[in-house]
Length: 101
Image 1 (spheres, rainbow, N blue to C red):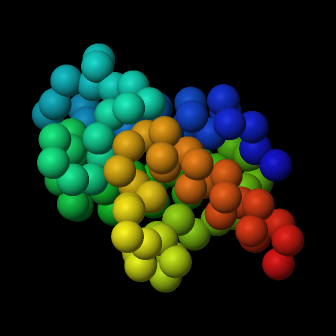
Image 2 (image 1 turned 90 degrees about the horizontal axis):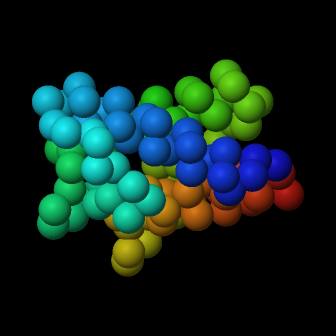
């Protein structure tokens, strides 16, 4: 299983890259940076690219295969993509569920 600190570094690095690609200032990206909703640092296309990028980094660098934009994630009342920290929680939960199924 991937450690929380490793998952956080992957998310923050991918999010900084996404913000840079969108022409924004990635220097202020933290675990509380808003990804989805009011005050989001990237648009909806950026979110899709971010999710794909994170899934690829997890697979290639850590042999962790997860689908983050699954039916459960998309039907939750509170988006698992709200902030970087919430996304890390979602990654760890999704990985744990995949390992037990």
